[in-house]
Amino acid sequence: MAYFHQRSSRHPIAEINVVPFIDVMLVLLVIFMITAPLLTQGVKIDLPHTESKALPPDQKEPLIVTVDGAGNFYLNIASHPNQPITPRVLSNLVTSQLTTGVVASGQRPILVRGDKNTNYGKIMEAMVLLQQAGAKSVGLITQPRLPHEQPVG
Image (tube, rainbow, N blue to C red):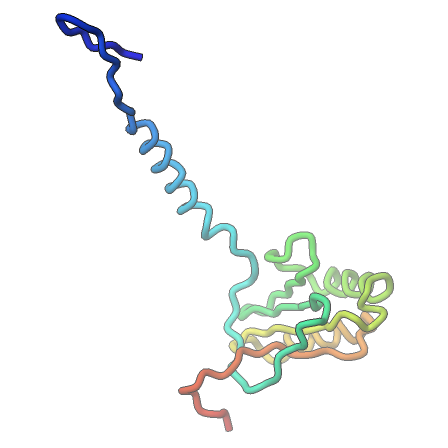
């Protein structure tokens, strides 16, 4: 503690230095601003807008194959879900899940998420790979239609 010298007595100075606190807070703010966008995982795709029913909330997390606009495949159970994988790796991972995982007992849905600008052949290729891996049924993920959008067709 610092003492303020006066003629007759010594009184402690009751001040708090907040400059280091402000410095720490600004550093933390910058760190969070930089890391927040990096925390979002996934593949950026533009889903088609349609009317469809939502999945029941009591189901297990689905096995999701994503096909982006460039035709790359992604799998949500891969070691790096936001990295593209080859069709062979996709087939092997799904086969191992179907034979050993909870998908084999029918408790986990298998879904394909395709960008609306993707070549239809790439989405069909993903569905064929899933079928060859042993999937009995495959669903498609769509984006709910916005109220101002008109139905297609």
